Length: 222
Image (cartoon, rainbow, N blue to C red; front, side):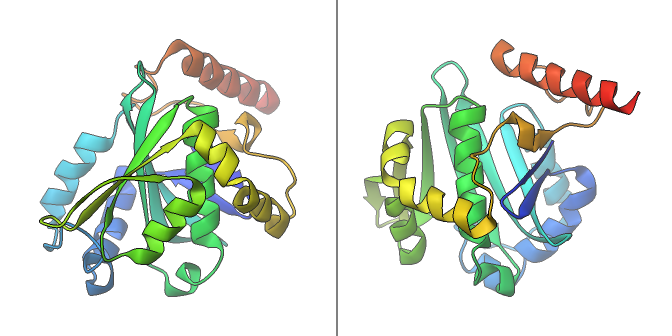
């Protein structure tokens, strides 16, 4: 699964990517901003990937100008209740200090609400990460609770709040990239042969869209 929009690309994480992610995730710069700060081994990374390579977890490498600069994800906690959670981190300092974090966060949130069909998403943020907390508030997140013991802030975002609060941010993203349209299925592509074990247990409303995308791409190639 790939998303190409607003000047960046999101590529769904594959096993071939996990050593790149592990290398950056183990850096002092990234670990200092995470709740789990131990150095991750290659075997632990493989075990982690096995738990997220499914139809409930959507982890993407963020590409800017053909270079992977970070990772963003949305996890479906319940298709039935339409609840998700998400997260993002960038390891490239130049990208971190650009508009890319804003674009990536808008893309994953738009994907969660308007493509995956969720009604609410949540986030856990370090209490000392005031930049992330304030940005989430600007997107429409509300602070649910704070745990001083773990250093976590628990935040939630509903689709309605996102549409109201993030209208200016989403408009700015479209303006910066000179793309006037919002994210749609037209911006999403899949390989002609789907990876084994993926997109098999998604709800019917998503399975139909995925099948249509693959069939249309196949017709264009023939």
